[in-house]
Length: 244
Length: 146
Image (cartoon, rainbow over all chains, first blue to last red; front, side):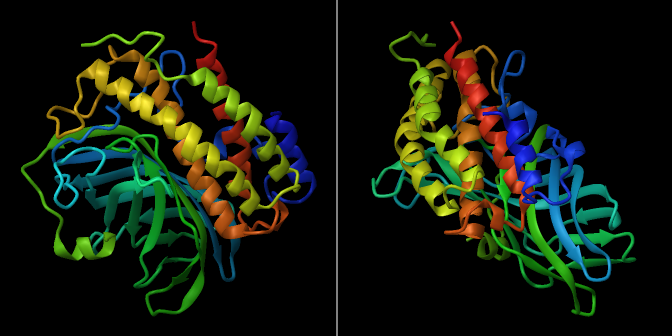
């Protein structure tokens, strides 16, 4: 398929407003970290379909957000940074032996910090809210109508993102509403994963006044930077309620 | 460690053929406004849950055979030994399909029975075009591997 030609057709039809010829390159596309696309000299680096014990892990993260802010406008912003999470011991399905197919894996986000620049908003920094219960849950994915479980798992990431907007002069967030990004993975840690939101979220200032909207967010998990085995860790109760 | 041979290796040639025959035309139709997002998802699902699922299972089995992995809790760091080359070469196909499935899902959630020009998230349409191209190239390159 001639991607460039089709993309130009999208622009010509006005379907991709703001995406002119200069941004038809792949630089702004969210399709997964390069390590997940294989090719010569690019063997996938993580053991697939494998359960490992609890660990602290840090990654490069790339996030693309589509945001509108009253008085400033709307923009799509590319952000880059780091994520750190504490992955818990995997848990077996009820009454079953612990194995990849039936296991549930959870993780608590300790830090997520990404930064980028927008012509509309100035510098944008997105961070998580570690004082709140944030994390990810990976659970079995049944194949529809077949009764068997696929090698892949459904992953839901739950975050309370905070958006520091330079030209707004303040930080906005989603209030008490958790933002959920979903994906399907067959590897833990999820290097190469792309998770995406499926709805909009209002954005509020510190007084609870709505100032804008998070229209869409897409997160790519990049390279694994550090892996530190830790003693057995179970899911904190508050986090378990959020990722259930 | 058990070596893989032609009779036990995942059939990426078949998967590539199915993708080109059944999915590429549908993705073109979606981008050209001939079908809705729901129609795209309905066309994708049989391929994903049948053809790709079988392939994914075979990649998992290939991994288990060469690495002596049982699927139970395993010690050691998460990094894979590059000596287990074949499943690690093929696993990006699984990642790409799973990421693509999620992209199709969110497009269907946003657009439903509408076609692509109704989107308010055009960057995901651009993603879609690039991912289809990249996945086709990945499958083709692996299918042509000696």
